[in-house]
Amino acid sequence: MQQVIIITGASSGFGKATAELLAQKGHIVYGLCRREMEHPSIHYRQCDVRNRAQIATVVAEIVKKQGRVDVLVNNAGMGIGGALELATEEEIDLQMGTNFMGCVNMCQAVLPYMRKARKGKIINLSSIGGVMGLPYQGFYSASKFAIEGFTEALSAEVRGFGIKVSMVEPGDFATGFTGSRKNSQATLDDPDYGPIFRRSLSIIEKEENGGLQPEVLARRITKMVEQKNPPLRKVVANLEQKLSVVIKRVLTGNQMVGILRGYYKS
Image 1: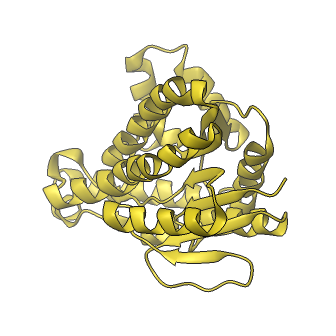
Image 2 (image 1 turned 120 degrees about the vertical axis):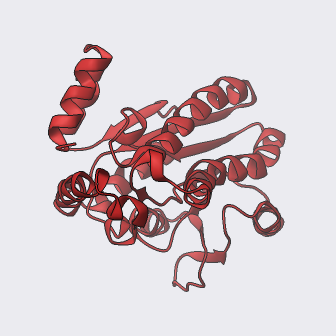
């Protein structure tokens, strides 16, 4: 059955791969991104997920044209690397505003239409970093932890209206995310944090560049879009990272922190 789908952050990486696959399968796909884009089978709209007025205008336009929104995929996100202690207010606002509040803003914009229709699906992009706090990616992890809690609560609140809410927890993937990460200059310049951050960052980038291809995640999201009852959460990662999620559930907090420190050489 053809569905009307909105995907945020659709200009590259997970968003673009997912939008293209869903369009290939015959769905009506609207891709939201901050820059102007054109595609033969994707309806691109320029929109910043931090701008609530802009979101409301775009969503209203889609509903006016299509009559409904069946699925929202909250994919828009970015990363800032650095020490938590040295993060600036602007860096924190950008990280949390894009990853977490962007998700909230989009959900609040589409939910009235879904609730009126008594059906719909929302799929939020979390991360392995939303399951465990990653050193030198602390506010990225915080934004994804926030999405985890938000998604669980939202699922409980709207299921009675026929709306299914899920989240996907990707591990390392080879996308443009690595190259577009913003790194804290204050951390790089700091005599204590700087050398450790550089060492950790080299490990992070190596893992990401050698990670899975975005098409793997696109196939998983497409399956969830087309499932009648998608799971609340789905880890999409290599075997080692899947095991790390399981291990975290059984280890003490100190043990897990020790493993993360050793892995990232922090």
